[in-house]
Image (cartoon, rainbow, N blue to C red; front, side):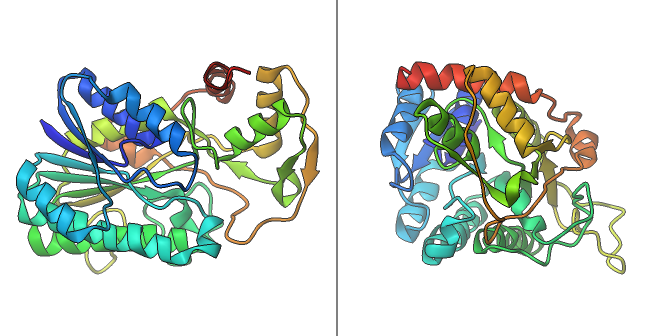
Length: 335
């Protein structure tokens, strides 16, 4: 298949592209290489893809309407994996327009490209952040997600709604994947594992929010990618049992699906820090702070729907995943 992967120089995008290329797909990787975090890391990820048979890179912003229209018209993709987005909950408090340009305008350009060029399946990144103020655990796709607590989360919920509209109006099969705290080698520098590791190695204290009373359903990168690929290969379909009177947010009478991809095993933040300390062989100096605006105290994925759909659920143990990240970090940064 010929597959467009947006955000190909990103953490998930690079790893997904490698998996697709390894099985023989043709991948067109798109990224704007913005400076939200160090561009050199994005370039290093991209270097792992460049030169591999079947891979081509296009530097383009998904918010560029004319550029995206031309790309879709020229390439005639079979399927699309849309991972490009302005990421980060806290950054959205200071830079809201970046989220509108990328996550709303950019997603509209993706939908329009798929619609007008007969793309067989659009798989796109949503986020566990859509659960917002929900306190019922574990988070289920059957639950309402109408109370986001950050603009980032609101844009991801909007993406799900926009996708459903295109599935309903134009018969475009769309599948949204709610990722739960992805971590692992080549990860993002703004994420906790990266920040904690860097600070501990440099002898600086780490900021531990909500005074350490946080839980996250940390999900290892290889598990995320396995889920993405399996979902890509099973095209979203109408739910024949869908009942519009008692509407289920997870499915529809259109070819639309939404799934959690999480480890189904929330970990206390202090235990996560303990896994980092063990892998580094160094203690962390902790600076306990209140919960930040836009953050939620806990995430926990119900993965039963994903298992029913593609026969897979993430299961990499935290210590194993953290050990792999630390080994990569020490090698990449030579520390």
